[in-house]
Length: 148
Image (cartoon, rainbow, N blue to C red; front, side, top):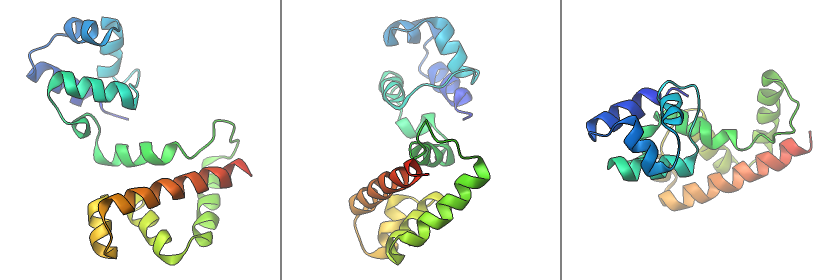
């Protein structure tokens, strides 16, 4: 992820030093520095806290494609020993197990990087229904990978 420059820009725009942000988040200034130089990543909860403190939208702390990859990365169990090419192959097999509509939703989100709103408009469903479907499919994919 390359979200450090976005954090640094938003922090500076808010007129806050690294030290001030660190104090408000109850972390060290060094931690904030590492986030800004991409030496470390903040988690989703911390991103929400940072966004609130800086008066920003959480999406401003992530590039859109990074957010999409972050969503999908949670599907891969920590114990998974598959190499990247094996994960791609497993994903292709998994996609064939999905109904056509679900497969389309999954591919549009994670391959074409379309938003839930855009996908919902295509399939005539709400954005919430798309998010729910994606959550369920990610859980199914994780279970599928756990069996590998």
